[in-house]
Length: 415
Image (tube, rainbow, N blue to C red):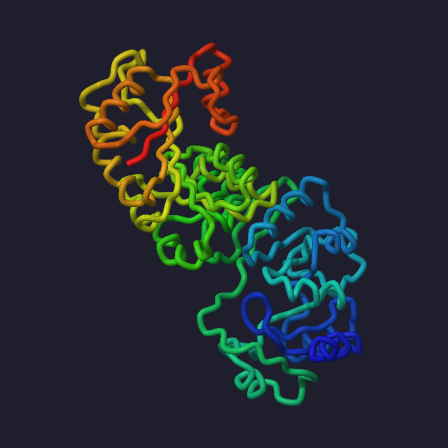
């Protein structure tokens, strides 16, 4: 088996050219000093300049150098986020001194847990590996095996063909200092949450968190992927103006046979639901950042069996007791939105609506009637009603409102 050949070659101090999680690399066992020296010679590299060390986990990093609990957590968060990020750390107590970068007075070492499951499994067998790009000094990195062989020929012991990699960029590199500060050494052009931690720009941090979750999509991304993501016959349930989307997360936990889409314009809220869904291991919920006016781009026509609208902005006056006429068109139950919901609902699909605002509730009943919706169920005190328990799942707002003694109004309607 080719996998076994790679393990054996590296164990014997040989060099292997193969794809990493980014571009092609020349791999050598990092714990084999002679193999690393051979790699330095082949790459004509200054021995003061360390290589990026690929490892299978944070635990492996901890076996090589001393790091604090806080740094451990930071590394785990960075490498959990599905990004190819290499992290430079202080090389304190490093026994394998041939791996340290000694160009500055304080030696450092650079690690990366690859964003590739097969490669991580290989690393669990081989141990840490050095993997610089496949190119002589001043030349472009090899994009395929033919170019790699043209560069290094028989000086490499084994070549593994991983196909073309024309559009793949090298890994992002950051320096993580002992005080927690981040220095970006090489960018990958993406937004990352750890870049904003020290500056405490909280909203930017949360938006960056949104980008890190693979269940989170900006509208343009979602439009390209929705056909693939929504394959299958599962019922589709949509939450409009979802906020933190924890309501949808709980529904998704209870109904694994359904697919849930939480839509909101604010990614800094949606990421909270994505984080909770990941903790619960949910595979049936997605989070889309979009203006609700483009809901027909988010949800295919005639595909949603249910729509939930929970505690939308009533666009009322300051004390919330009277609706403002200027805010009418912005309410999520305004006629222009109700017409959009008609387009994405299946026949006999259900629109659910919850609010603590009585003027908005009464106004919504009027709009539904005017737009030829049929109200099936209506209650002016949801939590003492006989309606299903899942209708009473509380959003963050709802918990606060109920604690303050407010009544929750609910209705559902069909076309």
